[in-house]
Image (cartoon, rainbow over all chains, first blue to last red; front, side, top):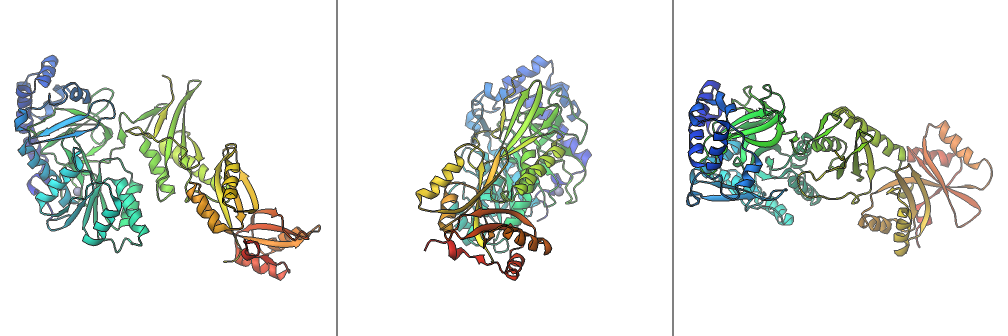
Length: 433
Length: 144
Ligand SMILES: [Zn+2]
């Protein structure tokens, strides 16, 4: 199977925009009539459902923010009575309350379709065995991908997360064709398989679909090399649906957005205005078909670019490039935007496994400074101090050229840097602003 | 492979770290036979040769130290002026580059014992043989 839903994945742009416009008009009316909190926002902005005649009118509508979800915890933004909600998921917030999302039966069906489209675009077909090592439970990753792979007709192995020794045995004995999990867990599994004497050639996996956390191109190369797979990125957030909002195809040149269900905008996070096509900005989504928990112009805080050229795989849908970071993760240092993921990318260029690092930002006499502390590992270490000095200098030069700032680099002993939980776990910002 | 195994350990330049390594080895009944440190303001590379390298490597790794094993050459030279210079001139003439050198105390006391880290151990061994300098093997220093 080349396409799961050729009609919607390969639509010409005018037909797609017409479909999106029809769906948007219906959605805004539905939202206005069924979600009092959003109706209030529209009333405050002085916009009525009748003002929205197509996607070109979307900028008239107010944004939905993460704080709106918190303010309406748990079910305040649902558009149907709770009895019509067929599934609830929740993600633990790093700041305060968890985010609760709900799906009608129809929503779940569409979600499974979106996942199936992604699986097929990465080269997975019905009859293939898919090992799912995302966590099952309130988190959308495990059950979401599970439903999609089931609908496609795959042999699903619902391994869930944890118990690595058992996961390795499952992979050895069942010989799955594909694996879905977080990229960092995949690296860990690859290392365990290597330790047991397996080579990329004797590992049965051919495709990996990784998501739920940011990862770099260097990590992709490492995963492809160590597991002998094609490693594809999947994008999603539970507020919009979960994994499968967008997914790479086998070309791996951006994640195809399921545009008939999700309308994307890219905005300047400061002004809220659209950036020029192809430029980097904050992704904003409108769910065009969701019934249980529809969202209009939801600000994701994810920073990325969206491109519209037809892909060589044949799909015409817009592609989201790998998010370069989160607008709330982004550091502005001497006017330069810096994402912790950039530091990780550089470290991965120098070492097979990314060493643990921390970024320290400070302000000394009105001058911002950035220092990266890196825990020494065996790949970096040498008995010759000149080798270590030169490694430090090369790391510094590479960071400087990639980020455009002079950045200090210090190598420290393993286990000596603090470990933090949460989204900004690699940053300590000591600036008092 | 020619030479003696040397264990290098990455240490941050915080006071007490060197003492911790030496104590860890001593607590495990391992003798340090030769030792040198190269350092910068922030960190250093400690290089040691012990009388039980296998055990020392295990203990250091379990202690979460970053280690590296290299083969270095141990030689015994007469304890007299010009002996080391003769060795270095021979290396120079044969285009063998020396990364670093340090001395260690031999039990015999008559000859000086020196550790040399070169870029090519095989070639260096041949050169040493040709000028009549004998190599110390790991067996010579290991715990009997
Ligand atoms: Zn494509």
